[in-house]
Amino acid sequence: MLERYSLPLFALFLLSLPVHAKSIKCVDSKGTTHYGDTIPQECADRPVSELDDKGVPLKENPANMTPEERRAMELEVQKEASEAQKNMEQGRRDSALLGTYSSEAEIDMARNRNVQQLSLSLGNVESRLKAAKDKLDQYSAQAGNYARSNKPVPADLSQNIAAAKKEYSDLSVERAQKQQDLDAMKAKYDADRKRYRELTQKQPEKQQP
Image 1 (spheres, rainbow, N blue to C red):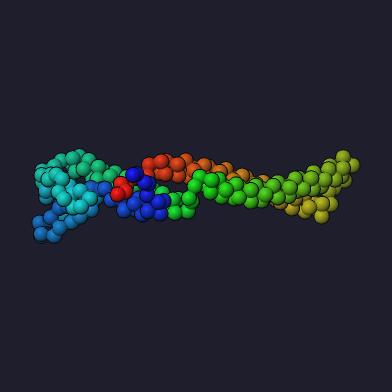
Image 2: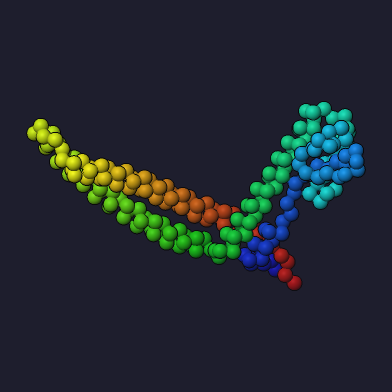
């Protein structure tokens, strides 16, 4: 009888996956061994070995490699190291995702809860923005009346207009940021749900006696 692993066990399974990445090894003229993803200056004229993730030599490169060949080897190793790091980080995110939720419904509940909270906050900012716009329009209309009467705008009214403009500008920036946060939150939960489905549909199976 086949049975799927539980999600916590599957999360541990993800973290236990090996991180595959090559590395470079060389021994300089003084007998010092160097490891890394670049060829040190001390090994500029020395043979260089490519190692797998367990340190096993994959390829021995002669000392007479051209600069282009050495650079190509470094780029290949660095590329694999970068990909291995990305895979490890993805594994950690997957583990956290499976450890946090036990179903897609839970993800949807969390999404709705957080989206509602941020939507309420956004609505509050929009209300304040409308009030600031009304205030600015009122002050501007008063200033227009003075201008049409060929009278100078009072200093306190000018100050009110400047303050209202700043308030409106600040709230506009805040509204844009909250809208951006809301869109990002929705996208995050949608991506989490999609990834959760991919992971739970690909869980390894074990044979039960």
